[in-house]
Length: 120
Image 1 (cartoon, rainbow, N blue to C red):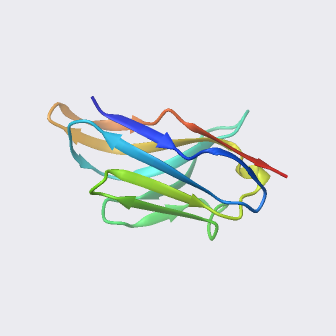
Image 2 (cartoon, one colour):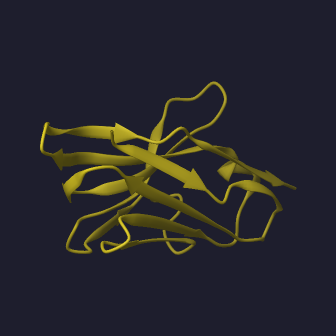
């Protein structure tokens, strides 16, 4: 059974930093792209950043220059370093793997979400 488990959320003042982690576990053969999404109250879930298995990255315009996504393929873990946080970054952050291959097949997975709250 594949799981994505996030950690690192919390409450921080504007201008502060947080680092999110998401570890994949289970009988995994390969993991393709991984990413972080967020959903604020009353808004749709949006892509924050994504990284391919080879390390190519993309970012939402709103976080460019402030957030950095990285991954450790050996640990099956993706990270999101968030600096210069703003109140508008407040949301539930979800980890996503767009395709995880196991002996039983391949599909996408979501983590359970972690709350990030930035106070002004």
